[in-house]
Amino acid sequence: MDKIIELMPQIIEAFGQTFYMLIFTLGIAAVLGIPLGTFLYLIRPGSMMEKPKIYLVLDVIVNIVRSFPFLVLMVAIIPFTRLIVGTSLGTTAVIVPLAVSATPDFARLIEQVLIEVNRGVIEMAESCGANTFQIIRKVLYREARSGMVSSATMLCVSFISYSTVAGLVGGGGIGDFAIRYGYYRYQPSIMLFTVVLIIVLVQIIQTIGRIVAQKLDKRI
Image (cartoon, rainbow, N blue to C red; front, side, top):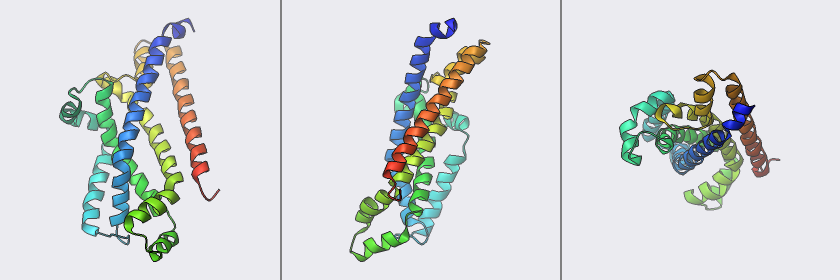
């Protein structure tokens, strides 16, 4: 316990780094992933603006990026990371591969959530003269908002584990702290304590996400 108290400043710093990575990663994933997922939904075969050939190309690209193990992706795009943030090391640098990995994941989740929207509601909006933009904003997003929150929660939990790899490029974070101070220094109590903290963090995120999703769900 004394060792844990002694390392508390580093633990707090590690939590701050984790939140920093998650907030920016989710923000970028939302800004890029929601439009991409919506576009995939709109042009998929049988949808409102179906363009099978374009959908096939984007579908393959999304699947390819999603299939990359995060560690391999992080190393493969080091030149791109340097181009964007000026360095390949540090917490900010880790956000680039995290965002690249998160965006297609979130886009796919958004696409699936939109597919689940009742087709009858969309047809009703079309019969009332709503254009595509109005259908997206006032029908699709409104009907799917609960699923979007659940998707964002799922993505957030997944990328807590991904952020553990950040230690390989000096990115920090609570997972990196557990490995450096617990595993490498043979301190099982530190390792156990940080694992418990990660579990608590995941439970808090999942609980908040579930509550928000339930409040936004029109079916409840």
